[in-house]
Image 1 (cartoon, rainbow over the protein chains, first blue to last red):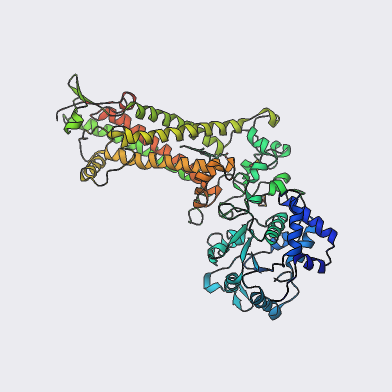
Image 2 (cartoon, rainbow over the protein chains, first blue to last red):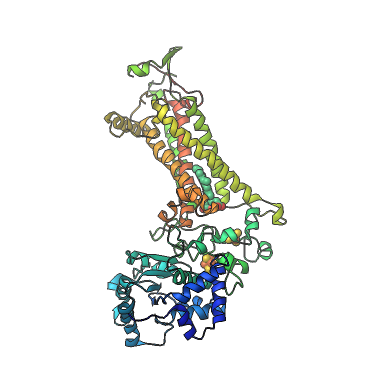
Length: 363
Length: 235
Ligand code: HEM
Ligand code: SF4
Ligand code: SF4
């Protein structure tokens, strides 16, 4: 294998100064919610550990995850993180193309078998043997399977790789599948969102490269440090929610006063993401702050739950019958009421008939 | 009726009577009813909030209070149900009726058929069992017992979202959320559960009142006093 460069050496080669490097370490420690003493730990790890290669694959996707990633809040972070990962393979960002590019994959397998991280943006379609996503003369799903079988761990970037997202929305004509349903024998971390927040992405990847393990995950495989709270839990309009003050129309008095957007279909109450804390575009804003509800983009099935502008969402996903709980329930309860009334009427009639016949009733 | 039941019989003015629902069962019935109604009203208001009160948010806590009442009655509902399950182990044989359908008994199936026919006006006579008739028992099992479980599991899973990941509610019930798709889906099924239980309430009240009026055994008073009276006792 030869002598491998450490992360630090790789960064220096990319023109990152020692000063920037140390700043990056303290920023990262703060960003991950670790104590200040961890800046030293991170620096030490990056100085001594051989660089872990990252292969970044693109399946069916819109590249919004990459777009978000390269706009990471602090310019320092994006520079440093990109220098950590850009050396290997990323169809969108790398200089190599064609056969040259595809060769990198084989070389990585040869040199770093079982030691590289596979970052997946987008997902593979399975219908027609995977023909709906074709790269380098092969269905994408084959490329994914081959790389996955040699990697150490997988990052599922965004809602596409984590849940399926729009291409997997009902009726999912290409049978697009989230990564965890195709690759079942490798550890996978999900970083959902459409796209995920830049700082969340860099935070996750830095943590993994530095500590050589996943951060703590929740039940569904998302890093707890960024996905353990709903947007609703930290929303600055939460006081209006609790007070019962809701926007009813986008142009009403409540909208001007910044009331809660629950009745406008805000999905904050069921959406696990860090938008209400980290916010977007270097902490500039997030949907609710600009007067629009959360769409729930980091949740499974968010395309299939119906209107983004109604609090009433679809009960079933992709079953064909798109109906809300209230509609189905109203019909059930209504049917019960009508049934009861009809049966009561029939009972009276039958009783009258029975007593005409001098029937059994003694009371 | 067989002899071990006969020991509970008493003669009352020519009418036979039987102690069916013990005090804890009757008490639970009403705790269950009123906590359910409170949950249904507050739950509906969570899904369809009231008009906004005027003023600064610091002087109001309308939605907060509605949710709080929902959660307090949820605890009453859940703890009541837990006590009721305990009573099924120590109570009389009728106390187990809503938890178990005796599917292995031919007599029960014949009774079920008889009840269906009776309610379709195909058979004139209602038989005179003491506890629930097989049809009522089936309805109660699916629409009350199972649904109560369902509402508690989905409700506390949603509650766990508010308490936070790793909270007791999340650890005990959080698994239901991915099973039902996602948080939004869980909320929807929780809401549909309310309608299903309301449907049961409508039919249940009708059946009970009707049985009192046209049947041959007391019905409404049983869940208040515990004794089942039989009129027209010629068997
Ligand atoms: C039969 C009993 C119950 C009924 C009829 C009921 C009804 C409802 C309804 C209609 C909603 C609104 C759903 C939506 O907005 O889509 C709701 C929400 C909720 N229910 Fe229940 N519920 C019941 C039992 C419970 C129990 C036992 C709990 C346990 C704590 C619970 C906890 C919740 C929570 C946490 C929410 C979400 C409220 C929020 O976060 O704003 N419910 N319920
Ligand atoms: S705007 Fe959305 S996230 Fe904020 S409090 Fe209202 S419902 Fe919750
Ligand atoms: S606010 Fe909601 S829809 Fe917008 S990015 Fe965050 S999770 Fe996605």
